[in-house]
Image 1 (spheres, helix red, strand yellow):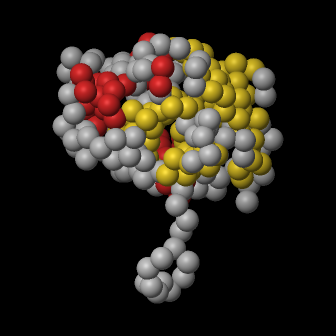
Image 2 (cartoon, rainbow, N blue to C red):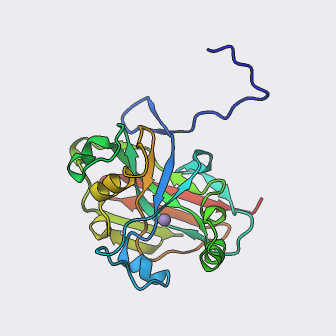
Length: 237
Ligand code: MN
């Protein structure tokens, strides 16, 4: 331990369980990809994404927004349209900068299932006024995540069902093969802008079927070969 004196206790390191290990995955940064499934881009009011003329775009969440699967979270303040978004999460385990698609696999430690929780009404205001998305995307408990499954034999996930149900009724049902930018492309692209580091998480976007939540709702989600996520929405605090 250093002898540094702080005014108050610094925040604890945020981390996730690792499947099959006692060691935990310490989280550094949380990157999220916007509009990475065509049908979701369309349900958000876009014409769709023309990959030949556009690049992925990103927003971030602070690690303090992370909550583990299985939690009950309060219905968040400042919204009347609180949405779920089920997403594959890529957990980076090696450093990389300006990585070629052919090298991208080297950076992947593993995968998790995540929820990119969103205050959709605040996102609409931000979009219309050209303001940042922070209030709509980066708030307490807004990034839900399961244990990290080491990539191992999974390699680079190119397909697999991704589904979400609210109170037992299926609301999202897609496949990872529908990603507009796949995992290799996302790692290569994001690493043009950041020196990716072990501990960086990347939420890869959500399929269509997003919708509103209310207190008492129970979310369950599944990604083939990755895992199952659960979350309960409590009363507003
Ligand atoms: Mn999302």
